[in-house]
Figure 1 (cartoon, rainbow, N blue to C red):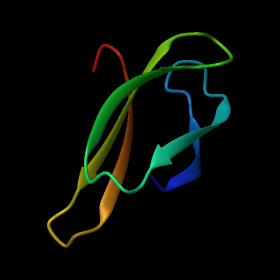
Figure 2 (figure 1 turned 90 degrees about the horizontal axis):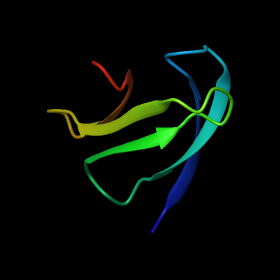
Figure 3 (figure 1 turned 45 degrees about the vertical axis):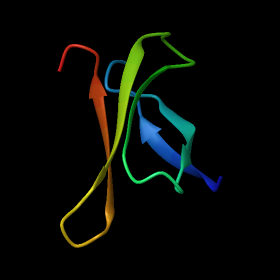
Figure 4 (figure 1 turned 180 degrees about the vertical axis):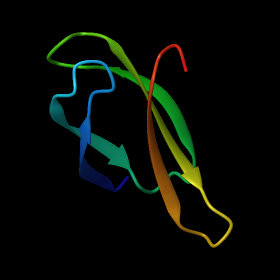
Amino acid sequence: MLLSSHRIYCPYCGEGISILIDDSASEQDYYEDCPVCCRPIRVQLLATIDGECELQIKRDDE
């Protein structure tokens, strides 16, 4: 397991927070609560056509 830290911004309150992503898994889709406002953030790690990974941060209702 290879964990890397990523700085994201909560889509609800706008606070900058750090999350850990497992870079050894190709695609991921999970929820993590914002430590500031406690609302659920949807974290998606998607593999692109050229083999790169794209990190998407969304609100629970998107």
